[in-house]
Image (cartoon, rainbow, N blue to C red):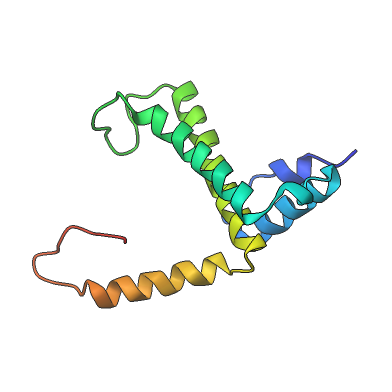
Length: 126
């Protein structure tokens, strides 16, 4: 049996590479690699985004830090955000893409597209 404590250790800064490696091993040990095509991972990701959206669906605007949310609500949000992140990392991996580098490149492109102005404009990440 695998050591689940390795997956649950607390780390302030975990890398995308580390998550990718853990996910690959997790899938390999279960024989799930055969199901992890780009299409299947994308559809799973979309499903998880739907579950994430449901959490906010009827809440209206929500304050930063979620001050009015219960611990259970925050834990549920963490779980759904994690599902989205993990599928996104797996999708990038099976497509042979470096997600961290792609994100950094996108930030640079956005900085060029939306230069600093006075007063600051509303951020847009497209």
